[in-house]
Image (tube, rainbow, N blue to C red; front, side, top):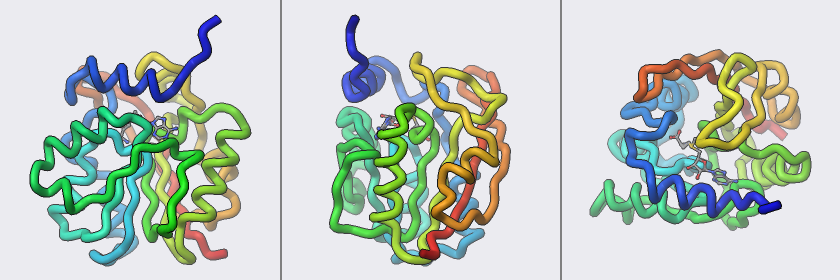
Length: 206
Ligand SMILES: C[S@@+](CC[C@H](N)C(=O)[O-])C[C@H]1O[C@@H](n2cnc3c(N)ncnc32)[C@H](O)[C@@H]1O
């Protein structure tokens, strides 16, 4: 039996599918952007988009004047695509090709954002490593926003199984953080189907 290799899978996806051919595409990530306003995130905050792929979140962060933006993704191809789209502005961003649960950094972030990457982690070991990274790499009083498929959402994304969360189970998973709020969010895909997400926001007070 072939063993599943996440990096190979994602490099393959980003080599074959165009930006608007993936279910997670959104031109303006309204909900993600709304957290910056809601939590009054300052323009010099250190922000990381974990599993950011070639999402437009980074474009909007730059448009808004955020000056310390990092995008991390397991797929080099995804990062290349985001860089190519940004053109000259790409050098304003720190790019990390790495695994969210195993990457190392010297930096601590004030705002950790993850839309639709965390739910791909299924083994307790990977989930624990991801949580340790959140604990190690988020500043005291930093904000963490995680969005995953909900219990009413799809069971698979990009052809692979994900782990669904409820508002309660996602908050429970990150119980070492202080939950601020959670919401159910309906995402309309480019194919006009609807996927239900749950988003939880937290503050790291310890
Ligand atoms: C469904 S896409 C979402 C992309 C982006 N967050 C968005 O909202 O458009 C999932 C992304 O997570 C990345 N990914 C999957 N597993 C990862 C991991 N263990 N570490 C880092 N990135 C990962 C994939 O390469 C892909 O870009």
